[in-house]
Length: 381
Image (cartoon, rainbow, N blue to C red; front, side, top):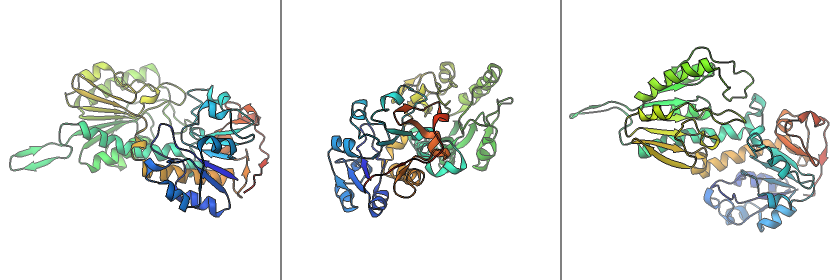
């Protein structure tokens, strides 16, 4: 089987790192890579070659590979040139742009979207969203301190005592929990808010105070995402969050709703009431942001408050992010090619949940059309 490693068009990371290259080559697969595919993740072409991979131009990789695994999808024009029956694996985000399914449904390709993998115990080892979110949560605190004009921990000296900074984390999922842990390690006083009741114990275990609003909607079955709340709840939430934000020095927001714009939790009025020099890092910026002032991939300053909008902070730590992403891909291959050959076994919840196109048909939103019986795609090693 030929497996293609491509250079990401707008990302410092690479989907397949050296450890996985070596294992694939050892298993008699042909691995081909685009020049400088991993250079921003500190993997040179020479390192790929020494691991057993072969350099090839991008167009040839796309046209000849049986399996292409990337972080972001290849372009629509490139998708039209893929090998018949090829398998594509990437973060397609069909819940944001459903038309992407038809775009990549070319030449009877089988397309797996990694962001559709169910967040369950069996899928933990392939959960790229959690892997990347953990890095983003860590980096969010560091990004905040870069522009924060004050000290984070308490400082005692002969000249007096400086109190610690106050950090508020909105959304205590994987990113939020890592942000809590990082801010605590840096000496800040940390509070955290989440609509999910299950988050309270995790927040408190990290030494942070949990900000609780009574009456949240049941979040069971939401796959680790937030759920839409009632208008009455939103009003109570807004009042309490407004009080906390006014006193906070650093606010990190992570709340997202799958397939819908991110909830607007921080209003312009709340930002205007914050102290000059305060910082907001909005990790939900790619889906509209949790703050009304947020602009994706930009840092704006309003009334002396910095608002940093960036949902891809993991790409700023490309070496480790690539290593984790690659390990997720290695574990995904245990479902996709358990014996070295691609097997579209849709009895697996991982494959069934993440498949968006199969055999010339768009199956996103209609996975019932996927037969649970195994169908093998054999490729020459």
